Image (tube, one colour):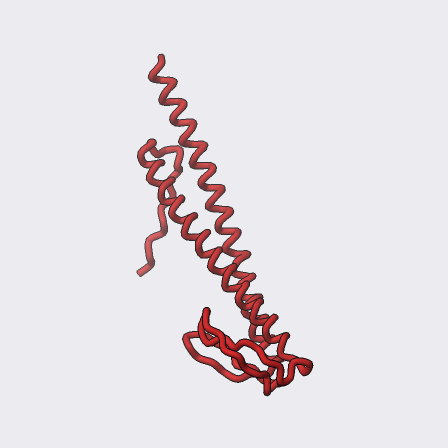
Length: 152
């Protein structure tokens, strides 16, 4: 059985309370999308930082003392011994050993994937913002028409 097609309604046909409800819904959607956009940007920044960190693992830093993160706020001193391999967090608490080159490819792929999603999300946000602007214009015209009738 085919799912019913969404019904399209012309917002100009709605009364002011209905328009206010639609506006509230659009505002919620915009807030959610903007929050998602911010979170994606933060994730992208973290992956870019990982690329920079892998770049610091180079022969000139062999046996140098570094701070090793145990948590987001706890670091302990350590030394770089293996300059060819790094441990990569692949998500949900799983870590794998990768060569530096493979780690860089992994993180760059993540950055590129997020960039694509950010571009798509930005387009969606812009369309929703355009819808909001149109809705506000319709509401203003209806308010003006309503106040014009009251003064006649």
